[in-house]
Length: 81
Image (cartoon, rainbow, N blue to C red; front, side, top):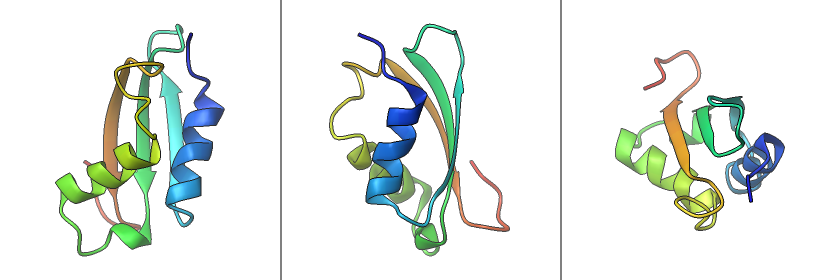
């Protein structure tokens, strides 16, 4: 069963309250998304740590309900990668 973009955003914001989240459905199938997550709380963290926080927020949905997520993270006024 596909995962709704709104649910992805809700899960991320619940774990990272200061996040600005942008979600795009890449294939129109509810299984392949791109997300950009910008948060001040990411400052001082490596890209890997930032991505780990986002994946932890998704509570194990990756690879199951959520098939693919192209993820970019960053801090405000920084470059998202």
